[in-house]
Amino acid sequence: MKIAVAGTGYVGLSLATLLAQNNEVVALDIIPEKVKMVNKFISPIQDEYIEKYFDEASKGERKLNLKATLDYKEAFEDADYVIIATPTDYDAEKNFFNTSSVEDVIEKVISLDNPKTTMVIKSTIPVGYVDSIRQKYGIDNIFFSPEFLREGKALYDNLYPSRIIVGSYSEEASRFAELLREAALAKDVQVLAMGSKEAEAVKLFANTYLALRVAYFNELDTYAKVKGIDAKSIIDGISLDPRIGSHYNNPSFGYGGYCLPKDTKQLLANYQDVPQDLIRAIVQANITRKQFVVDEVMAKSPKLIGVYRLTMKSGSDNFRDAAIHDIIKSLKEKGQKVVIYEPTLKDDSFNGVELVNDLGKFKEDCSVILANRLTPELEDVREKVYTRDLFERD
Image (cartoon, rainbow, N blue to C red):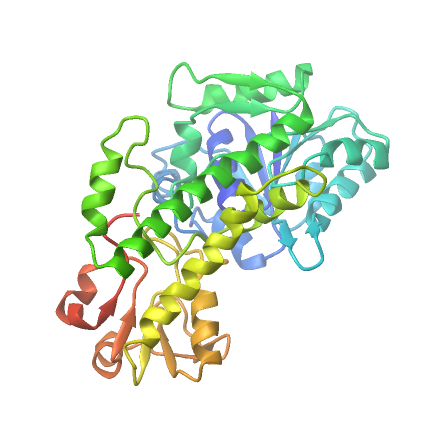
């Protein structure tokens, strides 16, 4: 089959790589440099398995029928499926989920008038979106299929999926699910077909539950810190209960990234006419946790605060909505001097904050160093480091 993938972020590029093992895949992006990199089998994102598969493909050790383009007609013409993996975002102030990038792709596909093309939305969307699109454009060749991927491990999670969900009972949806299952390395992957609204809700509720776990263990850690007791011992004792487990239990500065911040806020917006307390509390808990970190750092009366890395976690190059951004903003508003060490950035500043690219100078000059996750690079200045990373893992 010919499959087009619009967007080469974590979702789009991992799916393109997965499906290019057995199909002709054309990836569409609007950034020329990313297109050039993909065509040279150089991953534009940090992902261990994508990088491995690309390296093997470049050496002729693995067959990947994959190319990238800036031309939507080249990508979409004669495609059996167009996978939409463009970025969407939620604006809490306007109570508006920006799906313009998704609709731009839909309109381009419609303009080519190819009756055999089925569109599959992988971008996060509000509940009821697919139904509204079908009505708006008078089409039925579109459905939603939620993704459950981790940043930095997106292709791995496609190769070993926890489940495959399609928001349609159609033959095209069933065939698409089978394409994903055939390309996976995991055996006996469960496929669930359901209505479009149910599939849309699965994505938002699943991510909000993960955010709940992060917020829960962060609030446990806040309690332990204030009361002067050992948070790690408490978490170890709790997590040995098999009903609870040890996942998403390592305290942090707050949840962030591509999905959890926008998905929790979007789900909260979907509760506009529905009684609730818990969903709102999850969103608020993340704000409270970041303010707690700010207060903790301020109590140290620092002369110069250093922020070690903007990335949310190890193995990821994603800065988007990381909790540290709000922490930096609050510290600046309180008149604190802040510098950032982020080796992936070559500029002089980031959002108005000075970047220091010399790690040795960074460690020497800063009186307090904020690190969401510990690393051996900071071991020699451990006494300066403020972190809530208790298990030294994500």
